[in-house]
Image (cartoon, rainbow, N blue to C red; front, side):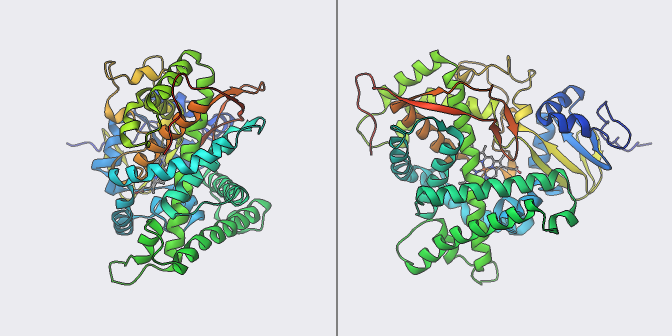
Length: 454
Ligand code: HEM
């Protein structure tokens, strides 16, 4: 007789009525990390809700690749629809597939190479402006920088600092609302005019106005641009009709939301760690002073920045920006040896996966050299800061090139020193950001070489 595969076991520590809510509320990162000890797949309960947590890289691959058709994006992404109803990161099924095919060319390897010049000319004046600026709120600086890079490279637009700030604040507000709604999913509450909901509506209006202006500018100058906005404006749906204004607005807003804060927090963590690892900082200065020359900065230059790239990898490992990812089963599905019923909410965390001592020796040590090719490397499926399978980040190459370029440019000019203050801790919001990080930019003189320029 064939017995049905069992449901995943419950993690210990459930309390009547509230389940695992108390440790989750107290410290969600530590709670999720602790769940890894209880096996490759476990269930937790939060009040009446049951959530399955997947820990093992093999089961994650199964879910994200071979069995991906049995899963939708789940709770967090449903709430992220605040940014746009059906933007690519939240779209499902055939709509997702056609939109991804449409936009993918803008993220091809060769296309990303073409963006390097724009990335450089966007970032260069922004870091030059640090001269005499006093202590920097590093996360905000990085957010403004990465937001401008996405807008310049993909939308041919460079907002001034005030507009940039307004967009950034709106993204923050909408992210906070999405997280709140995902953690406490009470649809009725989402419609009430609470202060939080009113703030979210205002933020949504600011985003729509800013993105609407970008689109209007493209419509007024139809031949002036060759970017993803023009691609969307010229696109047709499967039935031959053009995309609606709402579709275009959603996609552009979705890219802005997906592509700015993720890269910004990676860079913020990188410079935080660099300030506490003076040997690595010295080596980085040597590398950028040797590699960056007066020649235009090309893909070739980036491939020579090997320590820079290892630093980006190590920051993505230790501080995976998309620290919490959700899915939901659309039908009963077997995962490994267990059975998941239809409608089951699932979470997994690149952050806890990348800090698992069974996969990474001494995982809490920031060590870019663990990525040296001569060192034993973790299995491919154990390093997935960009996810995997058909929903893998579309901007991964864009982000890696951008993060390397920004790291190298900053290191060639500035040494960032922390302003004394409370210890910096990771906060798991929509992205994993530092509690606060203020740093002063001290000018440095490259040894024996000029800085890179386009
Ligand atoms: C370090 C920076 C970044 C990280 C860590 C990151 C991470 C991720 C992750 C984990 C997902 C997949 C979520 C899932 O499986 O449900 C994702 C999706 C996505 N990301 Fe990124 N991302 C980064 C930068 C970017 C950039 C720069 C862009 C574009 C400019 C971008 C655009 C997207 C899009 C469009 C999707 C949805 C893809 C789809 O569903 O087909 N991301 N990202």
